[in-house]
Amino acid sequence: MYDGSAALARAGSPWLAEGASVPQQQTIRDFGTSRAKALKDVKDRLPMRRRAGMPGYKKKRQALPTLNYTRRGFRLRDGRLCLAGGTVLTVVWSRDLPGDPSSVRVYRDSVGHWWASFVVPAHVQQLPVTGRVLGVDWGVRETATTTSDSHDLPHPEHGRRAAQRLARYQRMMSRRKPKNGQPASKGYRVARRQAAKLHKKITRQRQDTARKWAKKVVTDHDAVAVEDFRPKFLAKYTMARKAADAAIGATKQALIGMGRKHGRDIRLVHPAHTTMDCASCGARTKHALPLSERTYTCTACGAVSPRDKDSARVMLVRAGLNPAGAEGARPPGAPLREAA
Image (cartoon, rainbow, N blue to C red; front, side):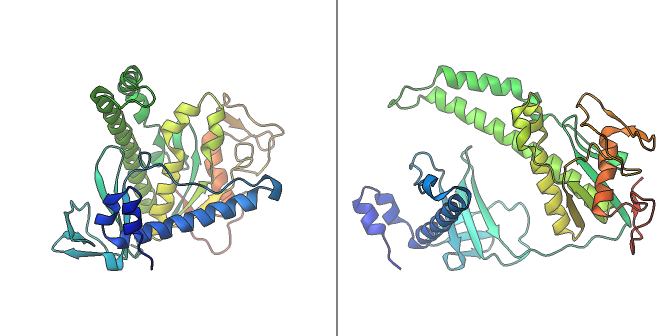
């Protein structure tokens, strides 16, 4: 393969010539793959006469450092990461690797911390059978409302608690923002770093809350019916900030990943009309309920229940996990019972 290190050095990037060629070649491969995929997506979505141009390279100062090493570009020796080119790193391991890694990505985040992300084969860690099922409905007042009161996930409000400090750092950045073409001052860099650290802390708090809740759910249930909710449309409404703070998308991905890891049955349910259907008889209201109406009353069978609880039970019915079902008959071959 062509090694362009010398050419890049002549073009004004001598630091590239000093590094190993393995991660540089892998970066070019990754960019070519993402470039081709982006172009294919553009072709699939847009008509021929309105096609957008191909994506371009990011500016050097806008992209964070990241290098991908394949199997021939790194080794693990005595707990240290040995990279191509004679670089040896002492890694602080978060946990032991479950297998031999096939590749590693070394990158720096917005705070300035360096990370090593390994790709290893996934192994299913089976949990004991419980014989219980659970329905999950996403919301803003509560992040997750389930058919079991003990497994509801209240809104953590991590972002709201840190909003005052974040606004302070953003005001500091606004006052010290450099003019176009001028280098950033030390005060601006310090304020930007503080804001980035706070953003990173909020993200980790949301991930920690989501993973702990997901682990509890998959430990106590064999099958979970989850609303396939896409919170993107909430950005159009006044609840956008609270919905973003709830991190519904990240919590859903954590539940799906945890279920895959432990071999649980996670079933995604289409969210259309889930707030209009009755979980007892299957009847549907003639009009959509406003968000201010938090109690669902069925006009057909007279069942009354909290709106989100009814939606969570609808998830079980649509996924085929409800022991009684919408018609009062047990689904064939399913000895599962709803969580109390």
